[in-house]
Image (cartoon, rainbow over all chains, first blue to last red; front, side):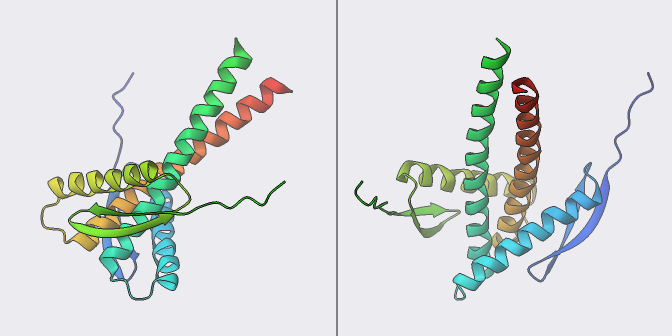
Length: 88
Length: 88
């Protein structure tokens, strides 16, 4: 089989008023979606905490997202366990 | 049944050299874990991008975490579909 060369996509996205260069093997659509979710989350936190500077706002966005991530990881583990039981 | 009052936990955590007050119904252990994951991720990105300021570092941390989150959501959907098929 021919060697697979995974091309990298490069785009510039805008998050909370700043431009960021994103590089990845994901589609540009996926990268734009990720950027727009982060932008949305930062704006949402800003509504409730208008005095926070953008660094703290971004840290809180990361905190909320890591929290969601841990919850989803638990859900994946539970689903995998259920699947295993059904297959046994 | 008596009304359930869910107590809120309050802690102060340190993320990338700054203190943050966290409030939530999650255990303080969970909140500390979330904070330490964000701190680790920011330090890891800083190793590869030492010129970024902490706001951009935190935004990139949020970007990476949202990317992971979307991948995990796909995984949850696939697992739920598999489970549904096995149960039908």
